[in-house]
Image (tube, rainbow, N blue to C red; front, side, top):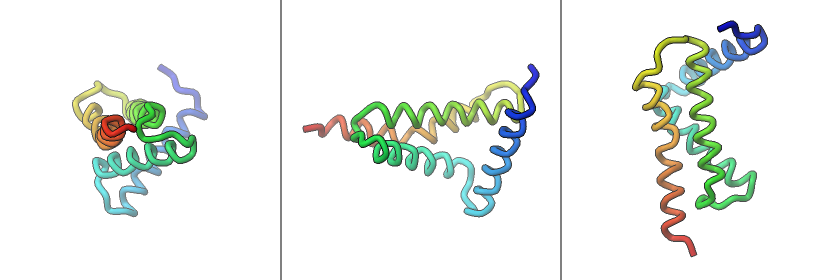
Length: 107
């Protein structure tokens, strides 16, 4: 599979930026997944004026988690393994908890 040069340079830039963020913060990639997932969930809720019980913010988090893994795979093609699934789970875990709690206590 041939990746167009513009997309290839975006993928390379994206991977380098993720590494820089990890280096600057001192946070592990797993912890960054947790923080980014929560940040996307809260920001989408605020920007779109959706409550946490709305599935839309959770859908955004899930979409970005999957796209992140696709970009990672395009940067370093190989078999999809458990690490990719764990990364997605780390990203969506707390947004799912907040979503379920918000739906549980809905008025």
